[in-house]
Length: 123
Image (cartoon, rainbow, N blue to C red; front, side, top):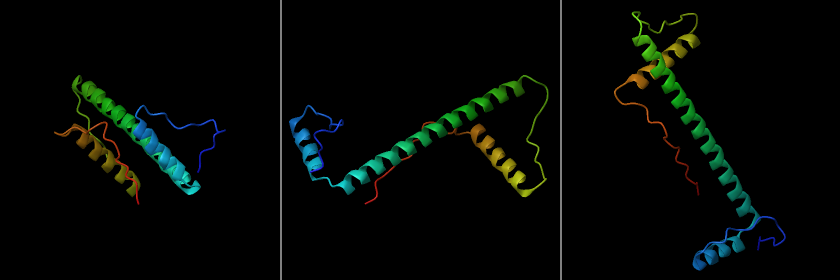
């Protein structure tokens, strides 16, 4: 049994007695390896969630910047376009990627903000 009664961490006390017994049984059968595996899995999920939230914030910010730039562009007589820089392949690839992203943001189907990464546990 892995339960340390002197520890500062206690399992959640569920209202449903059957659920409490089921969880208690699982905890009672858990080994140190099971606990470490669970801890690592939950930690990986939390890190993945933080990455998804950071990307969602970035995409939202980028989308806002594109909308602001388009409204500023619409208020002027000038036409602007991406000017490719042919200094090297990396710069060219960066311009291509940014142009593709801009086209996707301006395209008929807007990017979905809030898409979550589905994390599944491997057996």
